[in-house]
Length: 280
Image (cartoon, rainbow, N blue to C red):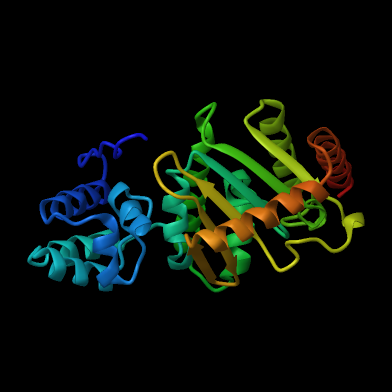
């Protein structure tokens, strides 16, 4: 079994916090399970805090200071880490996403954030917040495009998405915007950077009718599932819940068209949008 991941405290404030947590826990002679008990979290959650996969919450920081005699260290640094470029309900998931070795996602309505073009992202952010200032929308779009830089690495993370056919047919931003985002997705497929499938309307009912789903796996931490709704999101690490979501995703994959057939459909719909845009 591999040993604990070597932490680099200089890599980020969160890495510093995780390294200090591990140092103080080991100095106190506590296992991850031992430390998790007074916080009412699992030992694996403590491990995820130590490697920076999970975000420490203020009440957890307060309890850690108490149990480990840290004299306010965790409370002070936890407050500094609360600032995020992402919406509050998604911030922890985005940070976990950046550390994942594999991401599997089912998208029922919208192109996933990692695959959005700038115009598509801007239209979505503006529709979500119609009264927000331009500067707020600019920040949201910039954060989304920065997330997409994960795909600049040619091999990792592995990204496997299942797009409901509604994602292709919903005309977000008009035909030119849709043609551009679908061609962007097709290009990533042809570059062998992502795996993508389309779940056709003809499949009818399926295992994930209730909404979107994201699964993330890590080289040195248990897997996580993220489910979200309108302005809310929940990151889950309970093993039974994660296994349930993994089964759900597998069933969606089984119902989806093959990658080759999906690529053909994506490119066909993009061509239709191109023709429509030219006629406007």
